[in-house]
Amino acid sequence: MNTIIPEPDIILAPPELPEIPLPKGWTDYTLLAILHVIALARIVILNASNWGEGKECDGLRLRVENDRLRSEVGLLQREIEIKDARFARLDSKKRPHYRSCERLEILMIRAARGLTNGQTAKRF
Image 1: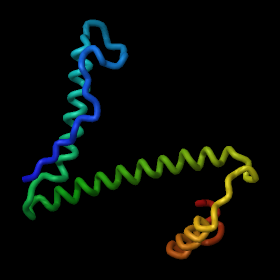
Image 2 (image 1 turned 30 degrees about the vertical axis):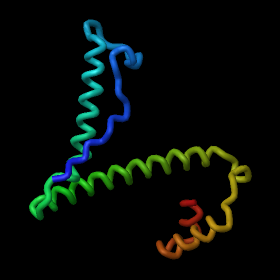
Image 3 (image 1 turned 60 degrees about the vertical axis):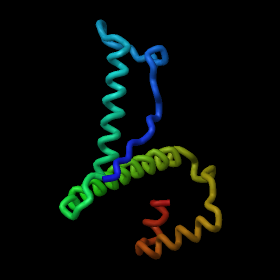
Image 4 (image 1 turned 90 degrees about the vertical axis):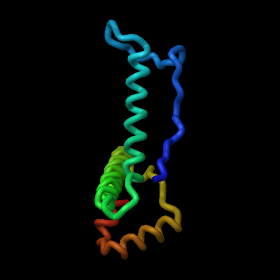
């Protein structure tokens, strides 16, 4: 089994800890321990997709990939909602225009999805 252990993004030593207020009686090492637990959880999640080599693990691997893709779709949908909310606050005359290559892509998406003119305008 080929285990992937990612390089740590941040290596924190006690003098370099971020300024996060802790409850009374907690030491800087408590915060360090919490950060290490989060890093370990990240490693476990990353390795879950690499776990198992045989066919008996295919179902688990597919479920992990499905969950990862659903999370990614959720994040992308939220990014689009934030962008749309920002552009909705702009006057339509002040919004930037699409370039010709972008307009062509919009027409291709419209054809592929079978959208009406109104649906296309609302999406883009």
